[in-house]
Image 1 (cartoon, helix red, strand yellow):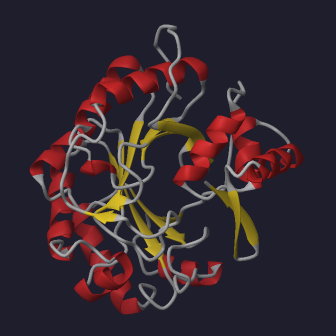
Image 2 (cartoon, one colour; image 1 turned 90 degrees about the vertical axis):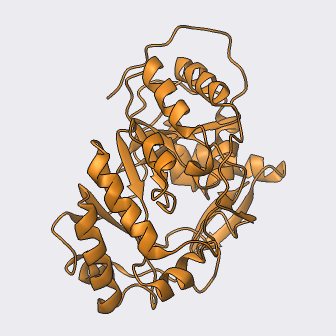
Length: 317
């Protein structure tokens, strides 16, 4: 686990840092959000944040890199025992033209490893690939390997081509010295058939990732027809893939030893993804009843709202 090496300064409100978000695969992950809400290269049918508002391939510095690094530095003064600093959030992080500067800036202030969750669509562009070389883990998505399934699931920007994207991931692998974890979101009746899985397997063989992580729809998706696979069906897909394929466990784990602005952090988490009572309880090290009570208060204030999916209750902001 990395240790914070920053000096104490007066805190400023964090606009682009949220969490930490707990999960089995990344532990306590401090989120970094560089992109305006739902600005992306794709409009995936399973996205837990809803439909893409701005579908684009244009990269620009949406927020100054130095500002984000300073927010991270100040946040690390207050929150300790972070396992990863993770780029994810409201849109595709590689659309920020200064993401490489932010990663390098993080490396100067802490040895906490950096992970980048990306849809991988821009890795064929040399500046994008170079910007991620300093990250410790890159997690690109590959939900389809055929053009038709790519269009049906990911609903890409009209200029994107799945073969170009896959080749970009392969070239990135040749230069990148960190770990690559390819993530596949499985959707019933879409990419769970033998033909599509065989195409994905062939594509992945050229990427040579350390891990292949299988997920399915567990939070409210953008489209109601994006239906999850059951555990047996996921297991059947796993058997068709290389031995390093695993089912990604997103169960919450860990807690924050120091409770700081619990309501504020909860609202920021709920802006980036639907959260549950258990998520909040584990993040802050409080009981589920106290977490539920706090969420109810925030709901009554109109700061978050409930949403039910697969008989489970989530909260979104």
